[in-house]
Image (cartoon, rainbow, N blue to C red; front, side):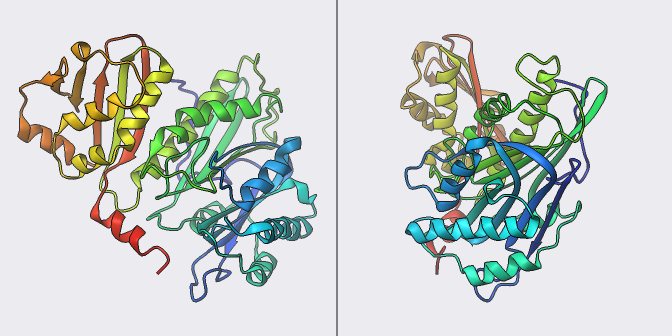
Length: 404
């Protein structure tokens, strides 16, 4: 743990120097007055990187962001909730392009340096007239980060935001972040929507690999319902206003920067999992002793994504057989004679067989706001952690009437 990294109380995506944001109600869904259209802008040029869904049905904003990030630069992000602009054909991509062009004209920057994010119902065209008017009304400020966070949520019950200060030699730098997501969460490269900002100066060649490393430990290790979104996007913008020597692969301060980025992404990812649709608790699955780190990751992801494991946690049922059943289909090597399964600190199974334990105490641990399930494979040094939530009747209710 690097002690020079400090959490900023009330920190958000505009905590770093030079970042402004704002939001407005564009009534993207008719009849609603909530904030639903937002913009982030850096007063200084940024290098930028992104990771995106691997779902082959990719939304128009994902296609546009991939295209605009080909040169590794960005100055602004426009985001909307209500409609995802996914499965909207060539017209949807043109709408994303127009959104970027409108923001670029307002800000006086090249349209290729504007990124676009959308979230909401799939298969509905964006109401471009309302978006045009909304962009005109947007007002940006250093205190607008929370407005942006409010504007991008859908079935989320709260915003997800973070700010961090960290030392790079004699220079103090800042990182901020925001995320949204509560359903359709089983990421493969990213989570639903997230933006990370920093005023640290970072080498353009290093920034993408730093983001991929952070995402692999965080957003790619959460699952709410096993469904990967069409719109999954994580963006990282660095404007260099802190004035530090550039962070690169060989930099003596690379580890501090990477740890700050990892912490920001991990906090946001866990908040997404904790706020899963209808969820009562955060589930953490720890896999130890796997034959490799890759197998540990596969095992942890499979267990935390299992509907049966999620239901058992919801019912405070210490049914450890469901954990082992999920483990067995994960692709990780398993030797039943070496297995141990724990609920919190209680060993409930050894050698693939029952272990006498206090059922009432185990049920009590499963009723806590944070539930730990630990599996020891006894085959090597591979370790991984994944996060999810319980599966409740409320989740079914939300998703059985999502468009009606």
